[in-house]
Amino acid sequence: MSQIRIIFSLAMLVFTANQSLSQNASLREELRPKLMRIVNNYKATIGIGLIHIETGDSLDVNNHIRFPMLSVYKFPLAIAIMDMVDRGELTLKQTYHVTKADLQDETWSPLKKEFPNGEVDLTIAQLLNYSVSQSDNIACDILFKLAKGTESVDNYIHGLGISGIAIKATEHEMRADWKIQYTNWSKPMQMSRLLEGLYLQKYLSDSSNTFLMKLMIESTNDPARIKALLPEGTIVAHKTGTSDKRGKIYDACNDVGIIFLPDGTHVALSVFVSKSEEDYDNSRKLIAEISKAVFDYYDHQ
Image (tube, rainbow, N blue to C red):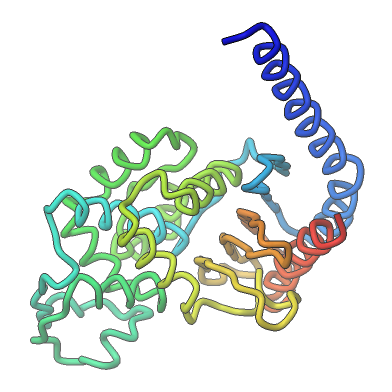
């Protein structure tokens, strides 16, 4: 390489580094105060992890806290299942025979509502649709069974370099004791790193990546969170998670996703709301306000 090319390359590296530092400084100076005003307006513990995927600039709030994921963990579970598909251990057309015993729990399950007596063969693709797109708890636990348990999924996610996520208990186990939900936790930025990796196709084949993104984009997950205040038609690939109310407290009201911005770039955004003294609507509203502040910041750059 000639001396001129080396000098040019070094100059570009310095320019890129300075540009990234400038963007992160802007996030700290402009966006963080807006987000903190929202956070401080609610009686809840709120975690935020934000990554602008194309530039790499990032921002986090309360990233030291381990937030209970609830159904958000169906997203990393789905990545693990799709990896098994890529490695030939499963196929999307492969069927699982759902028995009456699989449907024993009284829990959120569109699958159980549709097939109350079980005894039906469903493909892996259908189970993923129930679990990811409809947040079905029974389908989730069937997928954990196919994935050889929570420990296997936990190890797989850690093997991707994502250490700040723990997957320890099934939906059935979480229903046995409310404290168990805290064993399935995530730090906000780590979940956003997982979202970023999905978008950048770091983990899965093109076909598997496309399939999972489609499930998250076309899902019926609560639209009153990340999507609620965004312009109509904004694409968001997301997964929600919600706890039951314990006394006056919601232990979790979460939404994590990839926002498709008008300029063609993307933001991975994870918002975890824990120990919320707000009612259900306000707990969702604060997520919507955070998402809108992030969207507006990038829309006006």
